[in-house]
Image 1 (cartoon, one colour):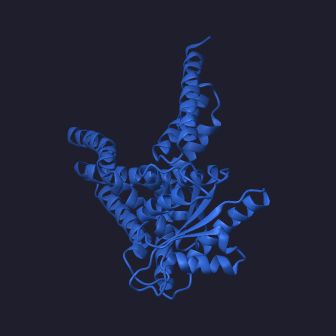
Image 2 (cartoon, rainbow, N blue to C red; image 1 turned 90 degrees about the horizontal axis):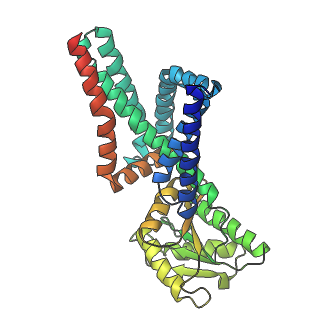
Image 3 (cartoon, rainbow, N blue to C red; image 1 turned 180 degrees about the horizontal axis):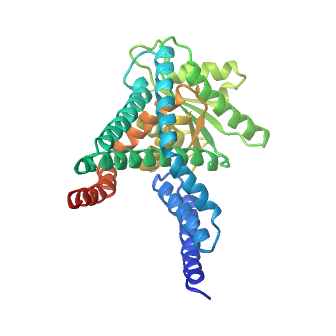
Length: 344
């Protein structure tokens, strides 16, 4: 047995162990964003094992992606800018609705600075594009891990058979549900009808209070919509005092525990828009509830800006951890480039 085969077998054992830990973490608690990191490590180890054992196809594909990365970055920037313009044309102007446009412009600006510095030929200035590339690369990696795990999470929680299905409210300025909120209710009704067909009787919990610009509570508007879709009044429970997602979970949990048909041991799922599902799941975990979260589809043009907004909110939950990760990636390598530039 040669040394490369031995190293490959050792890495294979490590891969099996890391894969088992990853699977167990996800099985025990899927509402942890750190699971995305474990999945990424498992995939990277898998590619390394295949490479060491003589399977070059994964490396060829990875190398192709690296070579294509500049074109991918240009394409991504173009998409973000175009999406931002569409978003602003279809929705009212706000900072949240401008995020994809700002991200696209920022990516273009970063690429322009990097190219300009490289074209000057001044090697002592090379740490600047190195730092920019490392920063944008790390932020992009974190964002895609967030998006990827959000997609994955929403698919592994589909198998739950809940005792109640909670719909997280959204604004109803006209007293009627908006298309976005209707999408959430429709997704919840789809789950509810599936459970009814299987012989179970989950309750629908409509969660959302009344804002100063709303003629009725969000819960009431959602319940009226559900009644129009043929849901019996007895299947509905209204929580009409919450004003935030945190209160949605807290007050709905209290309501469920007091409901004679459910009780303190009832299990449930919450339904929100797909871009909001991961952050809502993280919050449900932080609050100690057993509620998992399902996502409802949203308009394609709305999704990129909404996901960027959710990512920023998730980073704000643990700024020190994300800041430390960014520093560990950018500072040592930038210093190394600086040292090489000064010695040349």
